[in-house]
Length: 423
Ligand code: PMP
Image 1 (cartoon, rainbow, N blue to C red):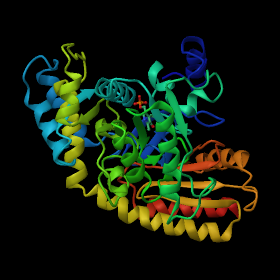
Image 2: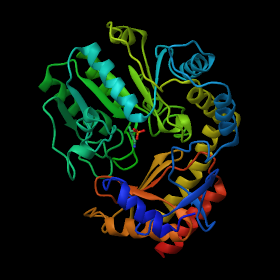
Image 3: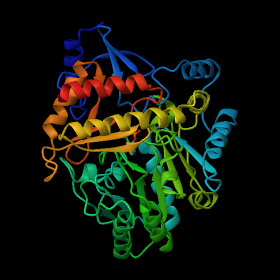
Image 4: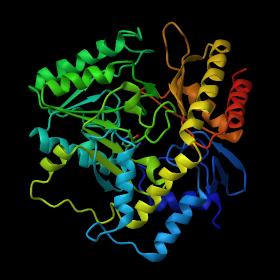
C-alpha cells in the first residue's frame, strides 16, 4: 500500500485540481462497515455525513445482490430483464399513483438533466425557477440552474432563462413566522412566473441540502406548485439528498409538504454508493418526451444497478430504517436543542429525521456566521473520530446526514463529543 503522502502526491500529479479533499489534514479511508469508516491505520470513524451509503457502508445484502447479478449478466435496456421492471414497480409503489413512469440513469446530475429535458419538452420552453443557493448537479445545464455554483467562485452568473427566488429560510431570511412564511416566500415564485410569462419549470429540493440543511416552511411547496401549475409549468422535486426515508416521518421529502410533484428525481441513496439514479414522472409528461427521439443510456437501468437498487429498497423496509431515522433523528434533534441552550455559538438547530443542520453564529442578534469555528469543529471532531462537514451560503452550518443505520448510542457520542469540545 502507498503511504498517505505518496497517494496525495500522485493525486496532485494526475487528478484535476478542482477536485477537493475534506478536512485540513486529508483522510485516506480504506474500509467501511455500517456507519463506520476505517483509515489506513485502522482508526475507526463514525460517519455522520454520508447520505450516499444510505443503508450503511458495504451492506452485505447489497454487496451480495451486486455479486450475484454480476456473475450472471450485465447488459442494457434494449433487452427485457426482470430487475429493471421490478425496480420500477417497487419505486412507483412508494410514490403517489400518478408518478408511474421511470427512467434509470447513473447519477443525480443525470437524473436532473433528464428531468429538465422532460419538463422543457412538456412546457415548450426553457424558463426555469430555482431557489437561491440550490445545487442540482454538475452538467452545463445544471450549473446554469444552480446558484450555489453560478453565483460563487468561478461561476458565470445567472443566465437569462433562469429566475432565482429566495430560500425560504426561517432563521436568516426575510420572513420567519413559521405559520405564514411558506406562503410569503412562495410569492416570489409567482413574481418569477410573471417575468417569464408562464410555462416555467420549477425545480426545488424538498429539504435544502447545500443551502444549509433547511426544512421548508409549511405551505411553501403547495403554494409554489399552485402558481406554477396555474401557469402551465412543471414542478420537479429533487429528492437526491433526502429521499428514501431519510426524513423519518415520510419516505419522500415532498410528502412533508403535502404536494405531489410532476417529476421526482432520486439519486445518491438508491445505489448505496453504486452509480444509479432515477427520474419518475407521469404518463402524460413521459409521452411528451417520447417525441420520436430515442432515449438511450448505455449504463442506466442495467441489471446489476437495478439489482442493487432493489436490494437497497428491500433493506430499508426489512431493517425499518425509515422508522430508525425518525426515532434516532428525534432523539438527536432534542439533544442538539439542549446544546443550543447551553452554547450561544449554536444559533439554530433544524431538520427532520436524520437530516439535521446546526447553524453556528458569532452573535445571536447580528447572526454573524461563525464560519471559521464551524471548520475548526469539523476538523477537531475528525481527530476525535467523528466525521462531519459544513455547508450553507456562509459555510457555517454543520451537516448531519449519516447512513440510516445510525444508532441512539452513535447520536449520544456525537452530542457528547460536540458538547465537550464546545465547553
Ligand atoms: N441534486 C442535489 C440536491 C444534490 O445534492 C446533488 C449532489 N450533491 C445532485 C443533485 C447531483 O448528484 P450527483 O453528484 O450524483 O451527480
